Amino acid sequence: MSFSIEAKKVTRTGFYPAIILGGIIAAAVPLINIGARPENFVNRDGSTLAVILNANWSMVSMLNVFAVILGACVMWNVEYGERAIEKMRTLPLKMSSIVGLKGILLLTMALVPVILEHLSIVLCGYLWFAPESNFIFDATKNFIFSILMLLPVCGVMTAIASVCRNMWISLGIGVICVFAMTIMGGFDSFAVKIFPFSLPMITFAEAGETWPSYGTASLLETVIISIAAGIIWKLKVKSE
Amino acid sequence: MSFAKYIKIELTKLKRSHIIWILIVPVVILWIPSIINSHMNFDMAAEGISPEDNFFIQGFMGFAWFMMPASVVVGTVLLVQTERAGGGIRKMLSLPVRPAALCLSKFSILLLLTGIQVLFLIAMYFLSGTIASQMCGYDLLLDPLTVIKEAVILYVSSIPMTSVFWLIAVLIKTPSFSVGAGLASIVPSVLIMNTKLWFIYPMCYPFYIVTVLQGEMAKNFDTFKFKSLPFLPVAAAVTVVCILIAAISFGKEER
Image (tube, rainbow over all chains, first blue to last red; front, side, top):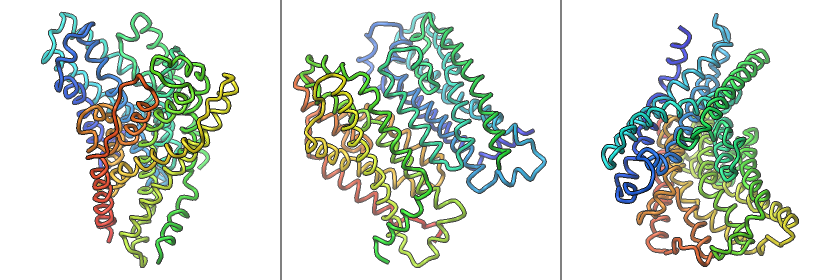
């Protein structure tokens, strides 16, 4: 019931088409990048999946993070834009669940680009490469891993946007975090790589043997962030 | 009403926006790795770039490729959303103002915000350069005039991009699409920069300009050579056309 309310609130903001469109653009990146000059890629060393991901994943994952940032900003702008949140408070609704429901909705929508991108990666593999027998299996593993890596950033953005009355502040914080991630990218340390905004950049092959540590880090972060987001939101509701 | 008055009104609206922090924080973050990794500036002999040139150019490149365009996008959100709250734009347009002048003043504010950010960039360059110089026992700072000249070139190269982002913000009313288009357009700029048609894509101008400078500084580094044609006329045309269309269509729905 309440989830459908949250899902309905954003229908007129362009939330759904914007994220789907973002997913289509992100999915087009490997097709255009490789399709325009396949001869540059087909003879590279490594598996088909590794070649496709190396050439495109940094751009694609950045678009994914942007989609999450934008989604979170738009979602909460509905509440704060026309002071809807104050009207909501007068209704017999449980205010505390809003933040969780929005987080889940954001994550659900964030899956759309990831699905489209992996379909496009598989398509690239069959159009221009001679994929190995385990290509589909590896792509599936990467798909599941990518979703896992996307969890913390969904949580963080939900938390940030839930407390920012003004959309440009939450958007600004989001892009600054992405920027910090690109700047710190030069440091080759696990602590930097598990920053919520850096995790989505990592592919399953890149994580390699250490994938369980990344997976655990991501899940732990998600749990901590979710609890923190819940507490912050409760305090925010109480203080107003 | 004079144009200066329009600008003054717009500045009043920004007073409580906290936008200044969104401008300063990334510039501070930008130089931290440069200070920590300052010893790496001495390992660039293969590229044929001097340590002080490298320290300068790495920071400016880091700023130009992502944060500079992203800050402009955030700025457009600020300008659009402050008017939307409480139907501000309808009230504004009911006053004896010329919508085109209003639009132009908002665009000027956008340019001003980027200008402020570039000023912080220069200030932080000198601060972090001084710290890094102390750490390395080597003067990593360039001549202030050179730095200011390059910063001005960088700033001017961002104006066409700012006009495109402003046009997008004016034409597309739904923030999901206008902000989404802005953010998404930053990502492929490195790809487009490497094609022959880079000059029709204003979002890559700032990064292109800094990359050209890097090529001039690093003797053994093969990168773009600056050609003013057809870049300059195209850039000028894009800027003028975007500003004109924005001014004509500004607030059309509300008028």
